[in-house]
Length: 306
Image 1 (cartoon, one colour):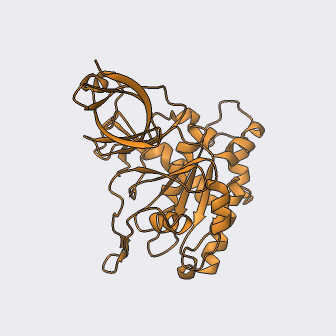
Image 2: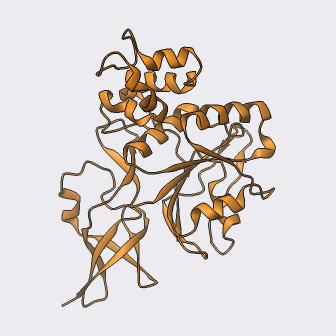
Image 3: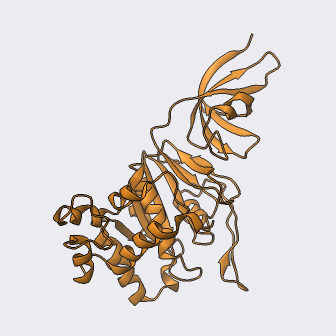
């Protein structure tokens, strides 16, 4: 008869899973029936999950149960079905890495990621990367938009060493998801923060000015200074899932702050008279790109592709 133990999933490839137990990493599969619990995701077990494992008499280890998740970051699966893809679970915070050129991170991607984190109550800090390549005016405008919304924006450069101490302070003692488009420098930053980590990095494709995928699967790395980071594959897009249209504005902090001034309690902040949000947009108190993202998410989430 085998023994049962609890562990944390640190890497998930879809068929094999690495789990960490008492400082030892073990490779295991999942018991088939875990897939049949009605969770419509492409990946039933994800990095960050707390799981119960069983080792049989032959020394083979199997994941037999998953503890309830306190939160997760989720997006619509890339085939536009009703299925979702969970990126990571049980995290303390997220760092979203953004670059304004080489490659350019679309603001719509930023906003969709932020909305998902707000919906699952995950604090987010935005990291503006590759400062040596960015236009100062574009950086100032980006800061105006997102600091105005209520987010902390840190400018970081792995090559110049800018912002690294602030990032180290954020990471200490916390489980942190690091996400962003391909090529924005996630893996480079993490490896610079903790050089002991073996994280692959890649260059930008000159022909398309897009990042090559260097991280194939989400992986959790323990940090020498305490805490852990989850490095994720570069994400091209971020389709929302399980967020009702009537609730969407709750996940834009600046809309949530302004909405109590609306004439109607069920205002959708699109066309109603006496809408405080629309008036704030007209006055420039809510950044127009953020409001446009809100309208676009209302309008065409079904059509949004990975």
